Each structure stands twice: as structure tokens, then as C-alpha cells.
Length: 93
Image (cartoon, rainbow, N blue to C red; front, side):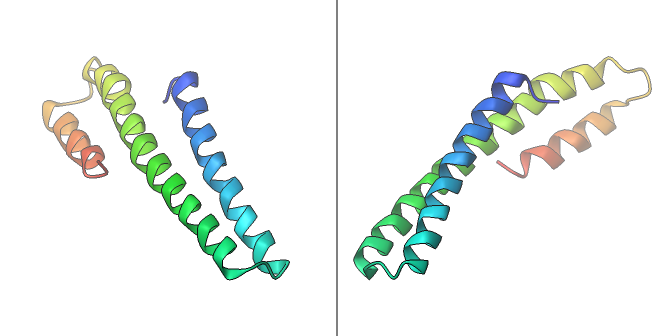
């Protein structure tokens, strides 16, 4: 489970990208100029790329730091279980 700070940061980044997407929908519905829409699309592309790359990396690192460390102390978990989970989560980096 993510820490509240990590979760808040990720939500903030994704909401920023969501705001850009909503702007594009509104601009299209209002018949705004193509140049303005293209500029906003560029902004949303950057926001998504930044939010996704940073948020995803932060989420995976937090999982490794917290969840795998906690799982290592569970008697029912084997080293193979932990390695398998580590490999699974790192494929998203």
C-alpha cells in the first residue's frame, strides 16, 4: 500500500493531465481554432508523459520499499515468491 504522500502526489499529477484533457474536449465542442487545440494537445501529451513516467516510477519504488520489505518478514513467503513479485512489478518501469 502506498504512503499517503506518494498517493497524493500521484493523484495531483494525474489530475493535472485530466484537466488538460477536459480543456481539449471543451475546445473541440466550442469549435476553437485547430492551432489552439493542437497546442493544448501538446500540453496534455507532456503532462501525461511526465505524470505517467514519474508517478509510475514512484509507485513501483514505493511498492518495492514497503510491500516487498513487509512481505519478506512474512513466514509464508519464500524467496522465490519475493523474486517473482519483484520481477513482476519492475516490468512496469
